[in-house]
Image (cartoon, rainbow, N blue to C red):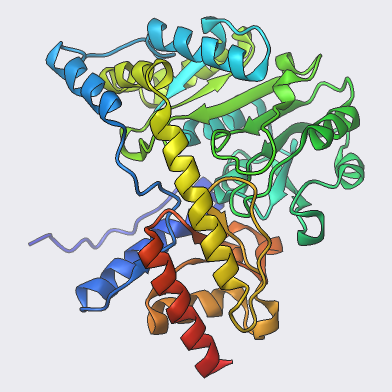
Length: 396
């Protein structure tokens, strides 16, 4: 039995500035309901339901057997950094060297370390809202000033360049872009990116370009601000293996940035995690250089599910949903239900057995929306549609 403590837990004041990722809280609630015997359809977690490709698993197992179980360089194994540099150079159309690559355990450390390395108190960071909640959490934790750029449905959840330009001040230190976008599934077109680049101009402002879903685009093409002349040295590209190769549990992401900043980010890696697991990095080399057919199959299946699920949502009373162009989320407008996002998400979990996220889990501008992950089987997605439809018919 754990002993009862009589001593107060005195947390550092900075802990009050730390946010969370609601998806994991909802997952825990859903699992608690499952322990009570309820059947829950999990559409809350942004995680591919596919297995890691067999060739990547084999590479990881082989690496373990060959002794890749020891510390590696803080910035990542040289061979993986070179493979990433070659991949980014090929896909973004710019020269990239391995000295510009830092490998980390997942994508979030690049967000966190970027804030710690660049943001001083009161420095302004412009970020998308609704958007991945860790952006705002890390801005606040770093004592920066979080400046939201609203993403609106009538613009297909893209950035209004004029609005962005009006938000840029002498205190702006960093602008965060995310395309394809979580939670809306929207993308920034080449025209959008060029407009954003023009709005920034030659100011000494960094751009953190979160492109973790760049291989999961169904309509249009991916275009990175790193590809815009004059922006490579001001861009921190965030990408990784979790979404593209169904490697969420392997914990491996990377940042690509100018070498002097890469050296500073590597210092933070040394202090925080020492390095990324060596055997996962060997698997990462195979993921990038090996057979890509599994990625194509997964993307095609997500598109098929997207089409079915969005069409189904648009038949449900009070719901309307645009067709997302990338990632694996649906972000329906639920304002006509008359319910707030959080209240409706809770009701669908508790009463309909469908786990989803309130749009407000992604910021204040997410009110009036829900986020569903289509990273589940088509059978489960159709069952979820049936349950949501029945609940709405009975309660709206």
